[in-house]
Length: 125
Image (cartoon, rainbow, N blue to C red; front, side, top):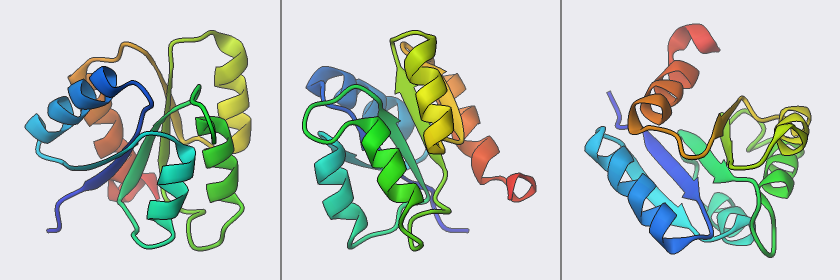
């Protein structure tokens, strides 16, 4: 079986490094990008198993990244987990944009890993 590759999109370097380490410790391959613009450039060339994105970022936000992915046929079926430290407004917007799951920050490594596995399990399709 192929290893699961996660595109992690997070603008804060410390948070990005911490989540990357947690995910790699859980056995995932992790590619990181600083914002939605970098993520879209990457997605034009490579298809990860799943995208884990912060919602509030400069340049192209996580919300805009989700919307753009859902509007591109070649990206529309990639599962997306949105993360936010904010309240119900961004959560509602992320769901409406097409996020498959939303996690509140800070999320434990166990919760992130189990959410990834759940979204990628054959029964989730």
